[in-house]
Amino acid sequence: MALHRIVLFYCFTPLPDPEAVRLWQRALGEGLGLRGRIIVSPDGINATVGGELTAVKRYVRATKEYPAFRALDVKWSEGGAEDFPRLSVKVRPELVSFGAPDRLAVDAQGVVGGGTHLTPEQVHDLVDAGRSAGREVVFFDGRNAFEAQIGRFKDAVVPDTTTTHDFLDELDSGKYDHLKDRPVVTYCTGGVRCEVLSAHMRTRGFQEVYQLDGGIVRYGERFKDSGLWEGSLYVFDRRMRMEFSEDAVTIGRCARCASPTSDFHNCSNPACRSLTLYCSDCASSPATLRCPEGCDSASPTPVGSAVPQGRTSR
Image 1 (cartoon, helix red, strand yellow):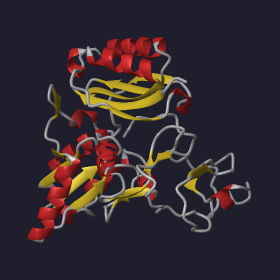
Image 2 (tube, one colour):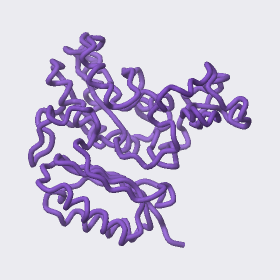
Image 3 (cartoon, rainbow, N blue to C red):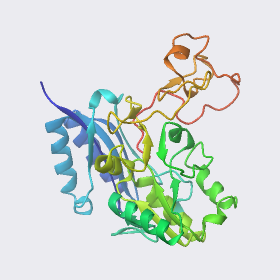
Image 4 (cartoon, rainbow, N blue to C red):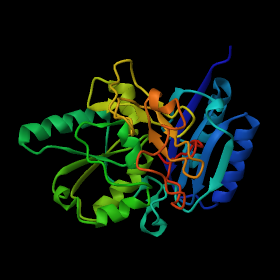
């Protein structure tokens, strides 16, 4: 039986003709039978695709033949094309939708002015050094708040964000100003959101900003559930979540009865469909698979509320 895998990667680099890269990536992915989502912008590429292992390897090799993508850091995980509804390849103004494409500088080495990259081991060294010096390191979640409900770094700051667009308003609100003189480690699923977030934090006066190189995915590969990470990792495909080992704890709570759970379900109200945590008992009936506080059908559908479509903003 053929093996299948999912790959995740991004690369910040100036692309003079994003549309040409889009057409090439579309033809490459379709020819290999891959599914997933690829975003191309003037600042680079961000991709999550799955398929038969040999096809995925051929895709990675071909993508790395493009000179600007030669040094791609590719992350592999279980899964395949069946975890995505289709192959989507689009050109966007930003690789990550912070809503400020004109405020990010990118050169051949990547994002200009971003945080210092730390390996998982270096993050532990920083935490240990901070404790010894009486300067506790702050972990700052660079994902949307609902993702952190099922997994996050211990004692992390989780901003009140529904979409990535919310981050700049959060940073400008003043509620995190007390962290500007503290060592701050930003983290997200695969690293791409923190590339941008850390740069925006530095322009707003945060003095000592780091980012977890390779994101939670790389950290989990190294330390699994024996380090500073707690819970499950939300992923933007039909798997919905992944664990790094059998020792993963369950930190999420059912929105209706508060039982431990890591399972997201869409509200049974067709006018709502909000993606929320429910335990298996509450999810078993349309009567209990509904927003506990009631649904407002006139409200905009929250991010993440529809069945995930393999989004790549990680």
